[in-house]
Image 1 (cartoon, rainbow, N blue to C red):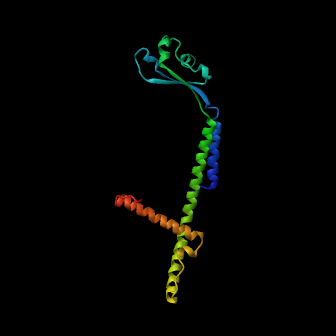
Image 2 (spheres, rainbow, N blue to C red):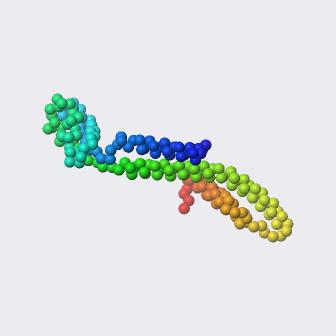
Image 3 (cartoon, rainbow, N blue to C red):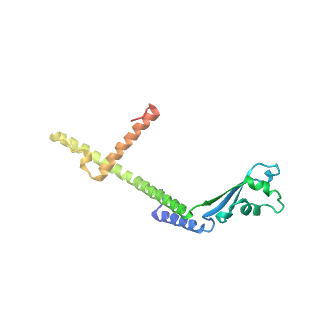
Length: 188
C-alpha cells in the first residue's frame, strides 16, 4: 500500500503509451478463416487451422486468403476450400482501449479510496476510544448530578457518526458470518 499518487500517474501513463504504441500491430478489420489442416484432405489429420488476413470484405474467401498460404504443390484445393469457413470481422480497437483505460482508472480510484479509508480507520478508532472514555467520565458526573448524558452520536461531528455507522456495519457483518458459518442460517 506504499503507492503514491505519482506512482499511479506513472503506471497510467505507461499503460497509455503502451496502448498507443501497439496501434500498428492490430487492424480493425480482418478476414478470419477456420479450416481443417491441409493434411485432412489426404486423410492423415483432423485438427483445425486458423488463417487471418487483412482483405476487403468481398475478397474474404478461401481463394484469396487460404490458397496463397498453402504450398504451391497443393493440388486438392477444390476438395479443401468447401471445408473452410471464412468470416469478415470488424472491431473498434479505439473503443476497446478507452474501455480498458476507464476500467484501470476506476480500479485505481478504488485502490486510492481503500488506502484513504485504511489510513482513516486508526484515526477514527482513536477518536472513538477517546470519546468513549470521555463519555464514561461524563456519564459518571451526570449520574452524580442527576441528569442524562447526551448520546454519543449527538456529541461529535461527522467523524463520530461515520465511526458509529462503521461499528454498526462491522457488527452486522460479524453477525452474518456467525449465522452463515456457525449456525448455518441466513439473515433476511
